[in-house]
Length: 316
Image 1 (cartoon, rainbow, N blue to C red):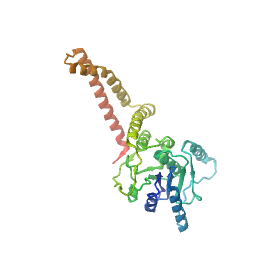
Image 2: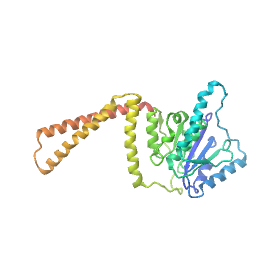
Image 3: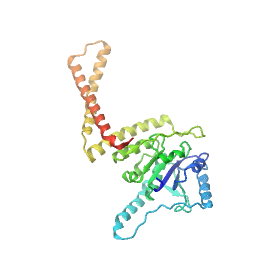
Image 4: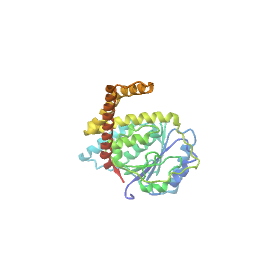
């Protein structure tokens, strides 16, 4: 890992009490620390700036991450890609870089001009790392709940947010379309799955009781994430198993849903008649049994095929 460039994206919102400890404990092998201040109302930005100035005053040599170009006709594709990335910046939350020397500072502070959510903050950090060809980009929350010593394992955990992603994976997905708020890890996993990117889970130890305060409003977040998962499921089916490469599980999933809907009126009728003590006609019972069994079997086969197809994308 040490012959590759490594960056850590730190999304932060009102973390003036915790952000300093996070910056101090990030391992020395990390080349860039990208702090995304999501329009904090407290002193978060000033705390980060003080650390930037402190590290600059020490005079520590910081590796510069840039892409070289020879300027010949064979670099045309690279130039076009660079131009596209420059144009894509308007697709992200409006922001500004606070550093006076962003090309050499190890800590980069990007201030959002409007609060845009943790997902948008991480996407902004990913954008910076993609533009600077960072080989491996990790995400650590600004509240100090993630142990920096675990970083060397290249951690991925779907819900804690402590993740690392390769440059190839960043190039394979549309970063600006990442879900902007809570639920972002789930949306990112779906996008990586559609792009046939492999994932690996690493055991880590989360850190609690250090003064952090969750900003998640559970009653508000649950329906939003549920709707996100519902949409993502069908988007994955259509994008991955129909348009990109056809797979029978696409038909099985949709057949199961269609037949299940057809079985619903019969299920309600059987339930009402049974509850009232009346006799259910053989025709009604047979129709319900046939439709329900067909739907259930199709769902099982679709899920089995789905699991089998995605095993290759999971590293043990």
